[in-house]
Each structure stands twice: as C-alpha cells, then as structure tokens.
Image (cartoon, rainbow, N blue to C red):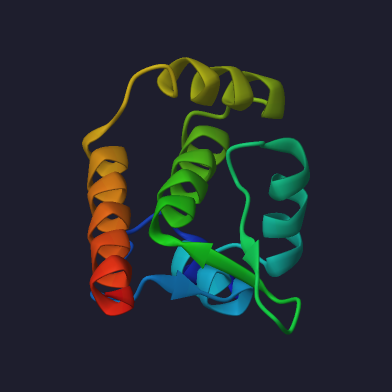
Length: 117
C-alpha cells in the first residue's frame, strides 16, 4: 500500500456484505494485514471467526472496531495501552452499531428457526 492509501479519508464498507477476509479489511481500513494480526493480539475486542479454510472472517462490527482503533492510534496518537483503555471505557455502554448488530443476529436466528420448522 502506498502512503496515499493510508490516509484517514472517508472509509466505505460495501453495503449488504457481512463477512470480510483479511485482505479486504486491509484495503478498506488502509493498514497492512500484519498490522491487523498484531492488533488482534493486543485488542481483545477484535476476534474474527475462522472459516473452514482457517482464514480470518471479520464481521462489520470488527471493521467498526478496527477503524476506531486506527483512529485512536493514528489520529489521536494514543499508545496501544491508551487505545485499549479508551475502547474498554467505550465498551461499557452499547452503541447504536452494537444494537444494529444484535438486531441482525436476531433476524438471522428467526430465519434459521423458520427454516427448521
């Protein structure tokens, strides 16, 4: 990635897509895959699922968290420790994005139940 891609301009997450591989997340957020893997090791809020092929599978909420981490580290110039503390404090209250994610899960579960009947 060149420096022009690493800027903090507007980030567009494709609509309708729920799962993303590490390469897609890297391009969307503007950080290298090794940075994402490192952030997973130091930020417990990032926990991508593993596909059958053992590839990381990120959800929209993971992208939101990663973009917030990037903002805290790159724009607010916080340390890893400071960013973890800020995320921990923020996590004590539910954001509208969290509520939307919960609603998506509820709908998925209803569809599964409907299919099982």
